[in-house]
Image 1 (cartoon, rainbow, N blue to C red):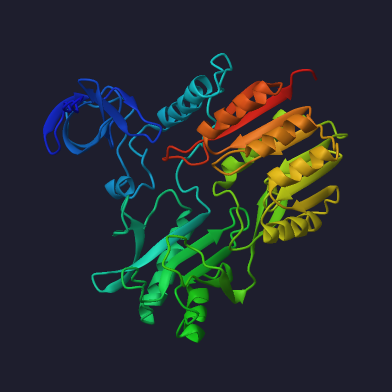
Image 2 (tube, helix red, strand yellow):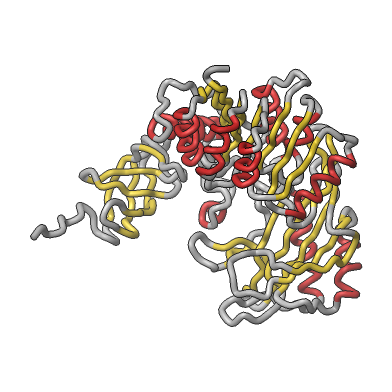
Length: 460
């Protein structure tokens, strides 16, 4: 019987290492006798004294005790807490190097998973100022040192780290969170205690229109009671006069899910407005809406560039949400069909089309893979298919329906390079050529990357 080979490192021991690479999450990789250690806040080429925190059969984790040399790509961090809680894990990396890192992530999966090493990946589209970009925040509330406090959970825990300036969020959102926090403190609102399932205020969500400046505040509570509501709401409106909507979302469950199923509108209506690509959108507290408005416009413009519509095309926009891409496509196409599984989102999408005077769109409620299968059986035709699926990528049934329908072109917008590459391999087997691959940085200071891919039917 084989005995387990001893690991070349021991937990809690100290070693001197040189960082060789970065993981897809942005952790430094050092190897001791071939055994990889993943280390936070470490860059390739840097020499460091480290301590081993955790070991497994195939890899372990370490932390930096002393940095002996420094990479030219290292920059001063805004605050160590942003690494600890995971909201800005790449903040120590020069921004151009972040963009290069994200391009490399896409290149890696195109080679390893898609098996397309010869398809060139374009340079990542970045931001001029990669800070203060988020138009939405969901901030947990807990009791720290006897008072209601806002901040963020330490990674892999529910220990709240008090934070007042998040740096990656719109500064006005940070100010609004603090204003709401102070009102809640003033009236003695009890913060949620998840261990005992007592207290009331669980999260403060703030959304702000980049172009309109309109603010929506969502108070996520454990119960429907919010006392004294008659004083809390006027005080919030006085502190944040740009507020057009205050919603109380009730989440009674002991769960990590932020929003519950029930909501009460406390001020205004359950929506605020913003603009995107010249169109006005009403956005409810549950609506999916990209969090980086300036980069989203770059992303959508690249979708339009890849689509290269002439005005006589029939287009399908799967996973259309509230119709943000749909309306941009509709201005260039003859007819656009949107598919979305969330019924309230479709209601918003129809309203947004009407509000913007666009009448060549038609929406269908349902799972994209089911609707596409139904349409393929009906022998529907499309000149262009646009998809923007969740992180898990496309269902096999969806891909089968695409290969049966055979749209001339396809533009795939992905938030997960690995599932994108998997799907591209299947589409290529079905007769589609990958023409262009464009990474876009929607989430600076984090390892996340959006990717847009243009595919064309090989026989078209």
